[in-house]
Amino acid sequence: MFYRFTRVFILFMLVANLSHFGCQADETFRGTELPELPFVDIKLTDQNGNGFTLSEHKDDVTLMFFGFTYCPDVCPLTLSTWKKVASSLGEKAENVNFLYITVDPERDTPEQLKSHLANFSDKIIGLSGTEENLRSVYSGFGVYRERVEIAESAAGYLMNHTASMFLLDKTGVWRLKHSNDALPEDIVHDIKLLLQSRLPDIP
Amino acid sequence: MNSLVRCWCGLFLSAICLLPACGNSSSGITVEDVWSLPVQIHKMDGEMARAMGAHEGHGGHHGSSNGVVYLTIRNKGSEADRLLSVLTDVCEVAEIHRTTMEDETMMMKKIESSLEIPAGGTVVLKPRDYHVMLIELTQSLVAGDEIALELYFERAGLIKVASEIRAL
Image 1 (tube, each protein chain N blue to C red):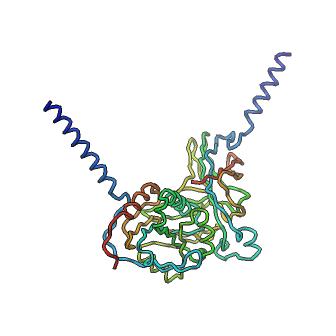
Image 2: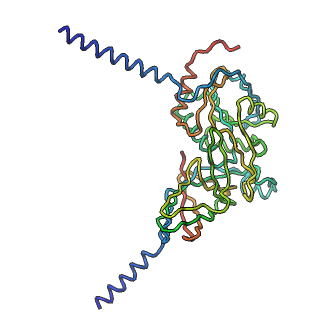
Image 3: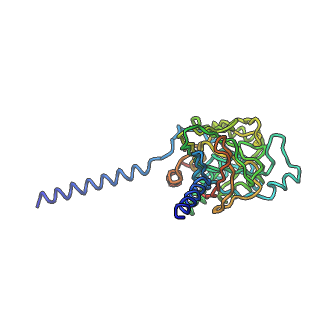
């Protein structure tokens, strides 16, 4: 009888431990965590011609990507991933800023961003702005951007650029990076963790 | 009489075997898994943009949209072949481009002359790699529809394929 009790007890402890570890593993971010960074504000214009200031949206988690609408491959693939992220988040998507910031302001007017983003999700905010305002955002987030003239191509020029997806926490601080081919479920997982997290008072 | 019928049947079957099937050619080149992302173009695209003279000197109209085609080319032949060009009615120009990722940076370039398909080899045009860039779409690419493409190879000649528009 005693042995039987011991065996049941050991089994119980084992299961309890396993589920504890399982829970812990699930609270680990799947993207690459970044060292503590200062808050960088974003002041640009959205696809409806309205101003967008990140510091006014500080209770939301932000998913951010730098791209251009003329791009046929990586940028629309990223937006297809975001479409899945937004639908998988359901109501929680209301607390997420999906920011698509152009690296090609010459071609990406608010009207162009509006028609392009309509292919994916109405949750996505397409941002453009003056070269000066955009430059301060690029440098704030270490974004590389280079215009490349393509000889004898109808495309004219294309943009080489940083293609990672960035996640900012509810205070607007950049916390995580996901590679461009990240799975939607991994991004959703990290967004949910950032939404849950208790943060110190926002200054 | 019987042998004459057999002879004609044999000739007929041989002729059928020589006819290129869709996406295949007698040279050993086959094209499979052809697909594109959906793109909804808006009123400033295509003809209207041209009518308004909205052309930018750097290439690309303001308000134009681009598309993409991904596909797999197999060369079962004993000699290398080259994909020279792609033609389609859904855009102004189709070009073969390649995306490369270095660390976290995406870089894109046009394949200068042609894309080699080695003997016995397979070249896959796929997301974040080789792709056909459909420049300045003249019509929307609607999920579930198909678009017609003509692929011109150095040895295999013309191979016609249909690209399925797939929403991811």
